[in-house]
Amino acid sequence: MYRVGIAGCGSITKFRHAPEYRQNPQAEIAGFYDYKTERANEMAETFGGKVYPTYEEMLNDPSIDAVSICTANAFHCRMTVQALKAGKHVLCEKPMALTKEETREMVDEAGKQNRILMIGHNQRLVSAHQMARKLIGQGELGKILTFRTTFCHAGPESWSADKSKSTWFFQKGAAGLGSLADLGIHKVDLIRWLLQSEVKEVTSALFTEDKRYEDGSLIEIDDNSISVLKMENGAVGSVTTGWTNYGEEDNSTVIYGTKGVMKIFSDPRYAVTIQKKDGTVVNYQMDAIQTNTSQTSSGVIDLFLESIGQGAALELSGEEAAKVMDVIFAMEQSAKEKRTVSLSQGDEK
Image 1 (spheres, rainbow, N blue to C red):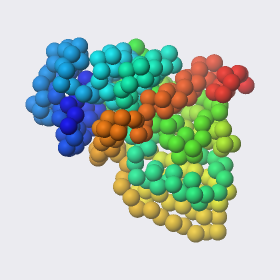
Image 2: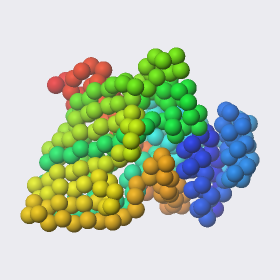
Image 3: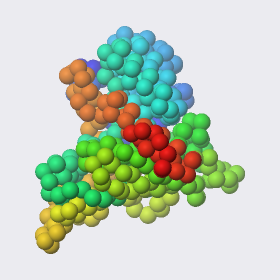
């Protein structure tokens, strides 16, 4: 049995971390911390545990084995390092941190303290994505040529605890980046994992099209992004993110190979469809992916607790997440400098 403290009591805690810990027989929720004490009180009343008046008091509780960090992005590094130094295992929400230096500090501290550091890149754990990776690895599509992967929804103000234009997701100081870091992080991690290949270079553009503050001015960060990625295995494809999809959430991926095409979450009837070059169509009916309006178990909490028991991050490690963040930072650089950025050498195109 592992006793867990949860820092940050917004929607990700309410709909993911707290209920998934409660459902796991290996976990006991020790308590919650949030700078808005009323939110911590609400979580404790619903899920049990105590309310810690400060994060430091949570870390000083010797009965706590692990901490979930579900705060605004800007606090991820500091709170993770504090927890690791206090001897706690850490599950941190994505994006991992706001700078490359911060990601390295987090990974290094986890190694120094011999503690588990995992980041919540849950798309790897979706059954359809696991099936897709297996089929691609078996050569069902032949050589992968191109891809496109998309994550677009109506925006964080409809999901976050604030439910308003004042949400921290729209504040550059708290969030760092917009839809690219919020949604693109998932798709970059997914495409690397599906193709089992690292990103070689990126060409990106960030846009702010529709999201506004209460005074009517556009938000400081991107609400849409479009990127072209070239992989080390030669495949080329696009990553598109958006907070301005006011229809059905789009979390789809299409992989084009020399033997056929794979569509993931493109058809509401089938999670995965393969259309072969000879006209054969194979459909796989599996669990639907999570959406902001349909929350099912992510599997992240179960994997985190299992990793603690095994003494090693079985998936979603801090080291892996740092590689994804390197791509995100390269995308940001590409958009800012209006050029292609190479990850392998850092040279300009």
